[in-house]
Image 1: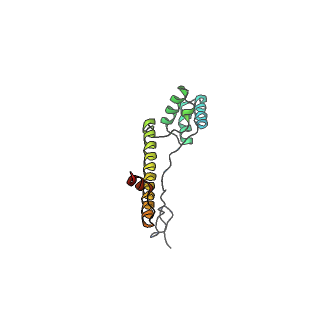
Image 2 (image 1 turned 90 degrees about the horizontal axis):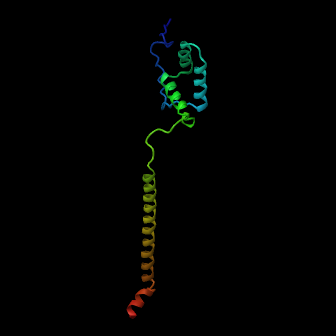
Image 3 (image 1 turned 90 degrees about the vertical axis):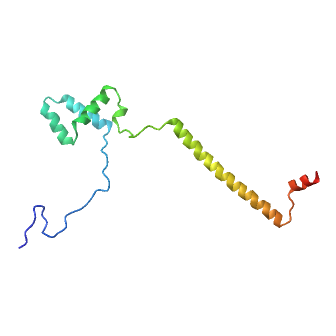
Length: 138
């Protein structure tokens, strides 16, 4: 008879090696945050706070931040916030203008290439360039 390990596997079996692709940051809605804060405001004992934190899987720092936001009246701030530095409006405008400049330069390059090809085709077929004839006549 074969024995089993404490994890329920037979000796020699490979353990589960499932790896989550990427952990996702938890985000809480404003309604959820306000509901939790109201529930804490209505609680009567200190043990209830710990029980609530365990039940909801929260940290006390969540409550501290949410209370500060509520006191400042930032109801829209209670929703998820974008992380990272704020975009500088001048930098955004500069990047937009640089992209447009690059696009226009590429169009100009293509137009000049087409004009050069048209000149060469005209020379091959003997079609005189009107500007050259006018210059020569003067």
